[in-house]
Length: 159
Image (cartoon, rainbow, N blue to C red; front, side, top):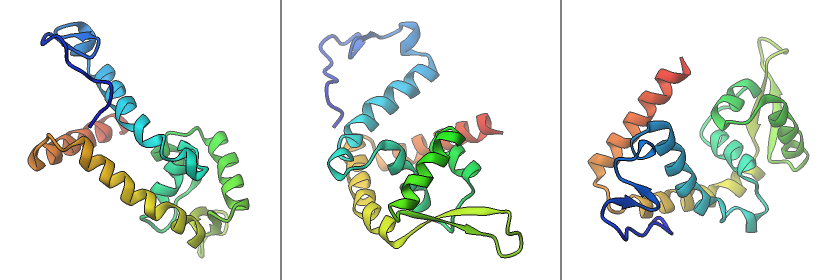
């Protein structure tokens, strides 16, 4: 469950009065929900020596065949110069590796290593369990709808 969100007055959610501008403004609702939901899970990263940024990179790379720095920057929400420094550090720690393309050696993709996969795999399971707990009061159909709507919004704005 989301912590620190007691509804004491039926006309408020947390400290926000229902009907207030920010109670009905999509960007604010998205940011607030993201912050409240993700911050609790992000606390679980610290004991494992991971930053949120490294977690995002490892989680993003865990499913695929590698990505360019530009692709990773867009998905992980990390500015490209900062991401390059993070990738440098992750490469030194053997969590990722840079590989050149077979047909175009100028094209470099970042790939997760076995060490990176071993580090992130249990966290991916924890993340899914945490998501399950956060969404425990939401029906499976509503969960799918929430994610579908968010994907549509991301696609529309990212175009």
